Image (tube, rainbow, N blue to C red; front, side, top):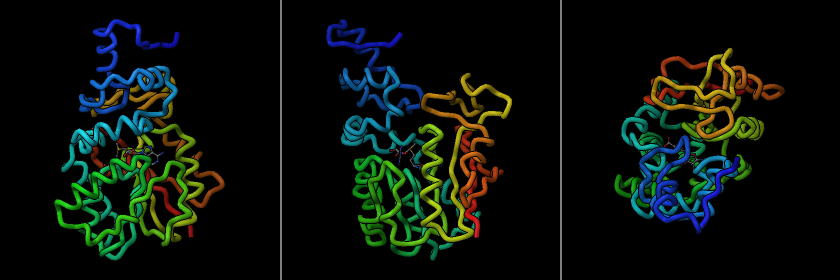
Length: 273
Ligand SMILES: C[S@@+](CC[C@H](N)C(=O)[O-])C[C@H]1O[C@@H](n2cnc3c(N)ncnc32)[C@H](O)[C@@H]1O
């Protein structure tokens, strides 16, 4: 049965539904969910939206209310630092070019821009409002805008990297495919190999389930998140990563030593020479 929230629903019960964030979305979104947007709630509750990140108006409203850090999941310092420490440990150096897919409000981007030589960082996201907040608030507060032309932050919802002016040494997608169905990763891999250097690495995080677990059953991760086969947050098996690489110049490797507080796992996709 499909759930339907209509304007005729008694206002208090409607409000209660509005306060129930969809699965997978950080619960730190009180402003967004206290704003009655019946049509959008219907789409979310009926599963017509891939993830709450596709509600661009709702994301923008949350950002305009000061929520640009919580919208990307909070833990601002911890998860930002985790990402730069990890990539540096994997060989990222200041002269390298880095593409940050789904960069959001630059939780890690601020640290990458500080570390890399000028104009070496590029970010994409479906939400312009998040990248604008990252640039205007976070990068500006850190006095780093001189190192990054605004044009390096590109709105993109189809992994269309044809705009990329350079070949990248490293690519990162942290907590992006956890919010998307598997085919998005396949499309991304099909397009991405054309803009990275041979031997380059693309690091992407996923919620991973054991090979013998049915994908249709919810899976409780040790970090407290419950993932799903066909709802956000999505889960995959490592074999799915290998499947996505078929007939493409990528090899999937399971990465150890990535300690994400919400138990996301890190996969390295290595571009063949
Ligand atoms: C949990 S946030 C993570 C942001 C950033 N990677 C970080 O670690 O701070 C997920 C981000 O992925 C973006 N996103 C979702 N679907 C996307 C897609 N199809 N293409 C690009 N970005 C996407 C969202 O807008 C959001 O900024």
